[in-house]
Length: 188
Image (cartoon, rainbow, N blue to C red; front, side):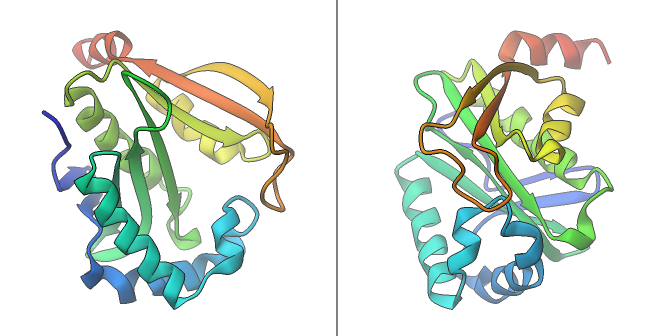
């Protein structure tokens, strides 16, 4: 498979490919989450309607170019966050990113959404590993990786230093190989 499905599900979350028709729901989720996002997401500082339109346009272009696959995370039909599979870590790999509305944290929903991405990522042609990258000051992102069985493979000084107010400038990289995922899923 060249690209993942446009709609995914995992336990209590549904994921769907971002569309321009999601503009109002995404705008609302971001606005309600700004205090939660600003420490970790550099783009949050410049948030506004036009950057949200630009993100949705870029998401469409990325999907068509098969470089990034960006999804709305929904629960009970409400947009509660965003996640993605990205081709930015080299051949054979995809990077996973995610964020949730603060009212949706602490319930395992990010883990559920990420699990759906992992399943799809390993079904894609030529993908043999997935990675999650986050700043060392953001242990919640690392907890998602740990719960899913990713292995921490590196901590290094970020070349650009901290890029968001909550960061310390130390990149943490977690990796899972297709073999690890297959072993984990067959053991269940």
